Length: 150
Image (cartoon, rainbow, N blue to C red):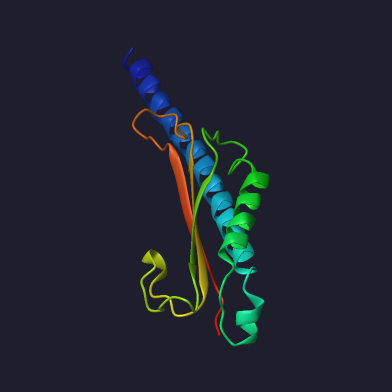
């Protein structure tokens, strides 16, 4: 009887470990897909700039066109990963740093900005990714920066 109890205990622990590993794999794939989408959005938004200002030697982004590009990319991308269920659409926060503003400001994890840059922060609410009751992740968030050095 003691062997049966030990076996059932080991079976439960190993099953929990397998579930945790599987869920962590789904979480990492979703984070990687969201990061790639954020990088594509930042690079796409950086393509829209004011040509007249560029001809004068200044780099000024066309923010309305850049935001429209990000919105289009998010609308056409769908969910961040096929095995993660999103409960609402992906939300984006886009920040433009160009020659209109003052460089040298802090951009969080990206440090001090010294060149024209676009930062895109994506956030999506999801159903709980982890099946175990003591792990809960209901939102994914990634941020990417595209920098245009002089």
